[in-house]
Amino acid sequence: MFELDKSIVQVIENYKSAVFAKNVDKLMPIYDQNVRVFDAWGVWCYEGSDAWRLAAEGWLNSLGSERVKVTFEDVQGTMVRECAFVSAIFTYAAIDEAGVQLRSMQNRLTWMLKLGGHNLRIVHEHTSAPIGFEDMKAILQR
Image 1 (cartoon, rainbow, N blue to C red):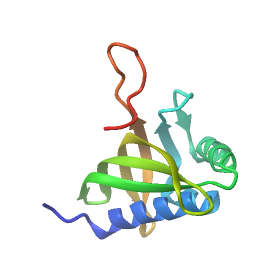
Image 2: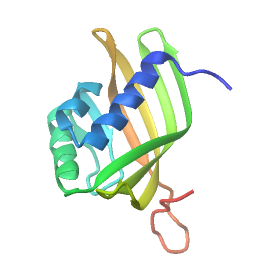
Image 3: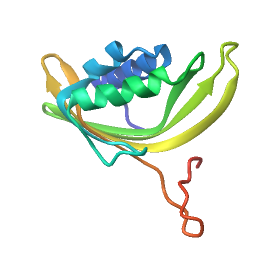
């Protein structure tokens, strides 16, 4: 087993914390201004941080009193000079006000990151889920 670079771990922790807090202002600094996002939901591609910010605001504002706990599994990552590559399986779990998990789903994640100033920033994010052959539905649990 290898150890992830601390810079990659910091991006993961910042992502998890910002999503749980439903704080878009905390989430967006981990993304480059020119980020390209291939999300798994509804829109083919988001170009730039302004477009991605609107999508993130829509998602986080739609949660009401629920929060989302994000966990990362099978994380693989590599730093090469000023760039990093990360792939993982991540779980979004809806948590109610009492801390009870209501539901969850898993996606596959790939990030390309580059140093922007002293921090890694996501320049490309790709989330996906496999599609079942028989019913053509997304498979959201491993």
